Image (cartoon, rainbow, N blue to C red; front, side, top):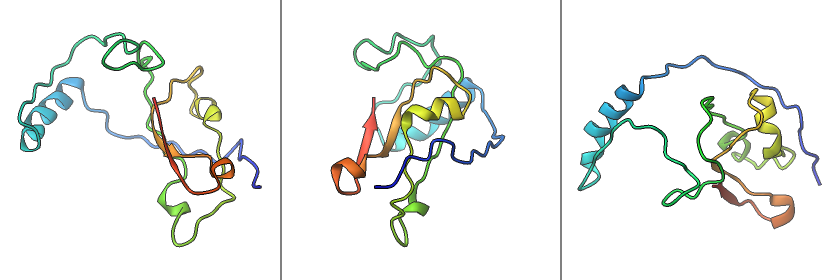
Length: 121
């Protein structure tokens, strides 16, 4: 079995961070082409542990990060099974501890025996 890469190389990029109002405007403009009813507004973050969200943390913490680990380049043309990462290390690697991590990711193939996907709530 491959070992977990606990200190993978990390590359930080400066990206445009739009204001919340700009995001709301873009979503209000674009979403109606795919949804019958749309209403997007900027509000104080609700307690995300409550319905309808039921996430593991009350809020997003004020230090959001977009993190890409692995991805399609590690799957094609051939699966690189030696690329194993532990989600517990991500917060440390991007400078946010403790970290509340949400999103999609690959499942633990060494335990499942196949390539798989997981969604972390």
